[in-house]
Image (cartoon, rainbow, N blue to C red; front, side, top):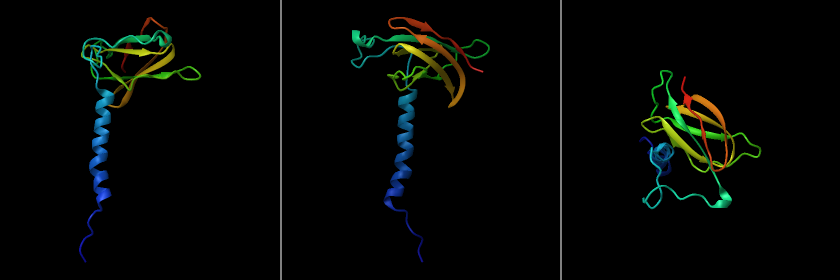
Length: 138
């Protein structure tokens, strides 16, 4: 009796699923220190007046005060009903800085390094203003 050969759908799953996971991770963790627009000519345009956003920005540092580059910063709305989060993810740049444009409301921001939560902080986002929130990893 000859060994059975894997069926084509199983082979596709084995090959395609890791590629999809890698592509998703790249989209989630791709970021930079400079704002980018779709046309490449500068920062993204301001939202329409009826959809005014605020900003939360800060620096992620280690306990010694050194910047943490490449950390994922993810917000969760604390409002009921929850505010929508307009982006997939933000990653700190080489200086540990991050910036989120969010709908006005209350948020908890969590910092993840290598997929593990390492810091949390809460803030209120006000339309047209920047709310500072520096976070220190443990």
